[in-house]
Image (tube, rainbow, N blue to C red; front, top):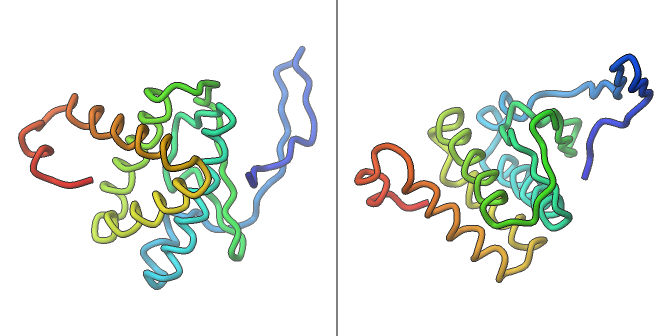
Length: 155
């Protein structure tokens, strides 16, 4: 998974120096490029998140503001809220929060973008886990406010 490289650490003084990724926030790019290009980027993001989840890494703040593009590559940044878990609840919350971020930031394209993300995610995480995580996302969405409205809307 492309992430900034760690250049220096000094735990005693609380210093962590990481590579600067000179690129564009995915947030600013997704609405400015063709849907095909956006879909390609989102499928790549789905693969990376699937790989993280498969290895027990939960990002904790998956948004397109925490993804930087350099050419056709997408770097995942800001692991400040991350944790380790292979639990469906943790993976489901990660995906749910990402969907909410897409709904609020990329409203006109959020459904298509999420489908492309899920395509990449399923390729890496495997069909059984994919189905289980998606079911957990549905369950999580029904816990929040406006439940009746959400029951009528597809993922």
